Image (cartoon, rainbow, N blue to C red):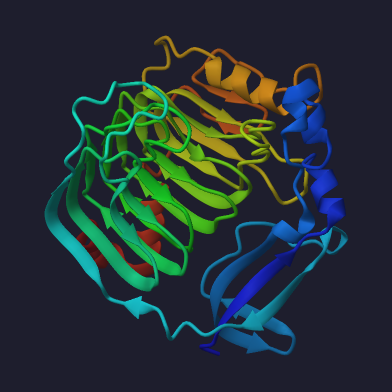
Length: 363
């Protein structure tokens, strides 16, 4: 009890095939395009979750935080082994500063490959746990205001802004608040403008993670972005001219495939909110509640993208449009109005530590 361990989902080829991430990726659109797609390999998807042991009873171990995905024997099972967290820093913070990057004002805007000579990130966090970024404003970077990288755990980013990003509007740029590693991270009350993936995770990030009361203006698609990130909560996220998604990105890029599993959109507002369910038991994606104007124009481009890139048209997995901003083949509840509690994250925090302490934390 008290030790840190890694709980590893040791996937096998049966799991890769079950979720359609094998050779199928090459055949969705086929031809020369398909030849460049990279099927997933089981060896690259040994998925680790760092946890602390809170109790041991015989051969049963209790952890401080739930696991965000299934671990099934037929798909390779799992293992648990002790890890050393002592090399990570702790209780470190960056607060109350503005970071403004110079840039080449003569570079042609919108041109792929143009050299703006600006900073890529404002704040990059790695090698620490129980640390934070608060009240930071970042201007003129090309990738992220704040990005959380490997060897991190329990990082809080709050009350921060990504303003006036500079650079192309294409792959690898404009991920305003980004999770690229670690686990148990929270983004609270953050603001982004002109992003592509304003609130996003990367490849093989194992949560839980939460984006709570965050807002994007002139945003793109906030999402688990590629390659099996699990356990992501989008709670009262507002991106009225953007989208929220938890989908199979299929043969996008080199073969992103299933971007996220066990993601939840709770009382959010977006032009469209698109959720699809993975093929395996114990993996779902949820959209519950909607706080926007259900009657306004919301479009279906994100749904079209998901069905097309995953090859789901005219199959049992095809995502449907139901006349609301919330659409897809995942678990959908109350697509035309909010549900209680107003914020799932805040209610769970109150349940865990009491309302007085929770309100002090959230102010």
